[in-house]
Length: 439
Image (cartoon, helix red, strand yellow):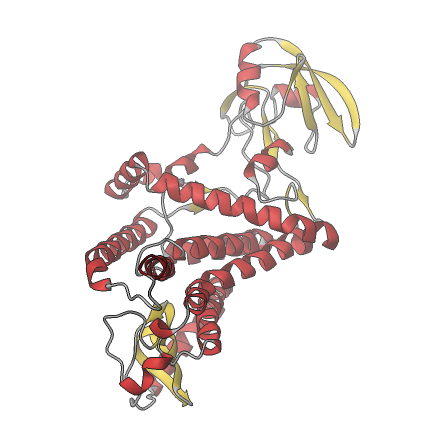
């Protein structure tokens, strides 16, 4: 986050008792829920790198940076090096760098005017504005590479569409047609009665057409094709639950890429995840998406509608029926996680699979990087749009320097801030009243 000037004469402060209390909380959390502490510390690193990007580019451009703080609220501890005060505050909800003269509304001492953000060149202002998102994107690239090479991902990719094509049998329901036909975990279903099977979701329509019949099913087992006859009928599993037809559940095997292959695939995977993030944002802010989100908030106490997030690296659905999938997650598809929900889901994912947690961190970095480039203040993208507008005006009016009047943009800025506050409060409420369940 980029902010305006601070008081350069303010002496560094410290609050030993509050600092000790914050450290005690982190120590207790380390014993009570180590994975939650890992997620929190990872988020601290992410936001620190974001601000470090702004800080380094501002310093390189000769701008005067007066503060670099982790967190917000009352100061816990700080120190001054040169003209910049560094420190930590109490509320762990972000970080910020303060740079003099971010816009024309700020009053700056005359002797510092030459070192303000607004007096620097277009390229320097642009580099400072995009530096935070750039750091997130670079970190995401590193995390994606590590996830693909060091721990592996389902199907060797982050793309859900590609993963869905690489599924194999993860569960076989006892007493089902699949069990009677001798289908095993790890088998790949190639076709049913001559109909090719690609995605797992195709099974439902195929077996429904042949319900009550015994049909040939072509499978691949350890690279060898074979055909078995499977009765597509109703059944009861060992728990007494009823199901119909084939009775298998999906699993996408984890695949690790070689370092060279991972290096080649990482940019493409980054592009895919970024595209998915943009699509999710577009869906969320569409008319139907907003209506759906409002419905979730107003019905948050309906526990029967609690959404879930399946771990794609686990064994998949229970397999009762031909295409029984975990569709309860549809309730949670069109909602944004608060910091509370993100920490809780990340901690649960870490317990189940560290690889999934690395993938989550990559997704979070891309999402934050994209959000910060929204061309409206107070986002970093707002400063980009102002710089571009000023550059256009300079060329149009043949001026050496043109300053946009940000006072005219204040209503829009306040509206955006109000919207952000509403999303923050509502998403926090959802994550407390009706949290997403990790499976």
